[in-house]
Length: 248
Image (tube, rainbow, N blue to C red; front, side, top):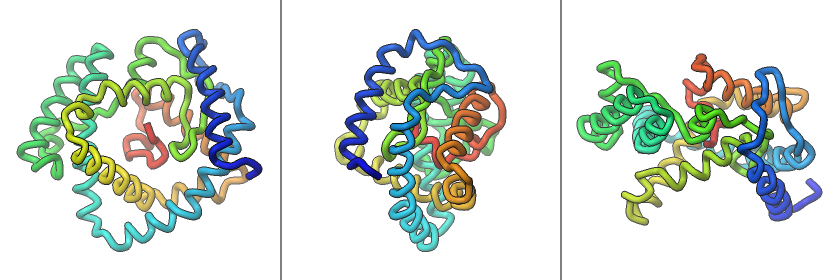
């Protein structure tokens, strides 16, 4: 890489500020189209992210997966998913989906009590399944186009619409205002550990995508955009398996 991480981040955020300003005016991108006006900068960020994965995330996740029992990784994933339910509830309401909102609320209440703080998933046992969503999807429901493809340092692939959604989600998440600083730090740790667990579980997929493809940037971009578009259309995608590179 010919730039330091700080320089890449500064340039990337500068470009991001410009595209965010025009987000609402972006025309919807068709299923077979890819809008990537910042490809040169995105490729530098991708090279940085790939280097971090190779040097840090891959070996750490390997150790984590080998040392931590599968049962613990499973209940930790349940707890992290459960703590995302309040934000999903708000977004389902904003999307006008009352059924999904009520199901999400019931899941959260049931799993937080009977499921012991979300460690277990009794809601799924009675047919009330997770319906993940975010403000990026809310914007899509409101008719906002996905905009330019962007790869963020450490956070990975995204689009203008989903970056806006990620920032709004941070502000509207009810859990943010309910937790103490100490509890928030525990949640951050739990989410970080869960990411390592996901990286371990999907190691074979990531190896093919990042290290065995002729052009890992193009492969990841195509995979991400197709996955997101199919998810918005209600089709079964890797999102249903907790995509390890879906960082929104």
